[in-house]
Image (cartoon, rainbow, N blue to C red; front, top):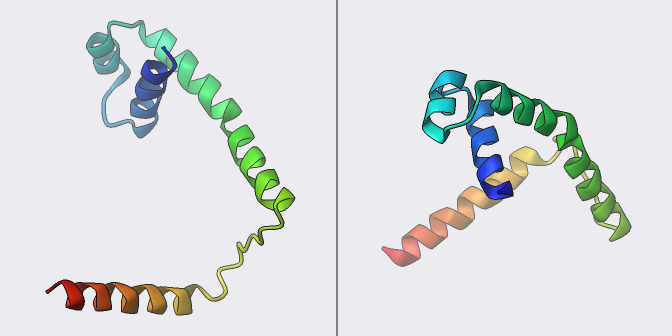
Length: 88
């Protein structure tokens, strides 16, 4: 049931289909989908808090300042270029 609920909620969050379309597709009331979506959005921050605490507990550095991003991108691009050249 949780996999089904997650699938419906993710589609609702994407907003590519209206609630009425989702309710007819999954044979649910629109109010139920709205309730699940609201519940998910309210509790989703818990996942990020757990993940962050896991990283900190395992002494993994977290960088959110963006410094080094350009050089990281260069290394990744060079890696993929060499992989592509080796495969061709």
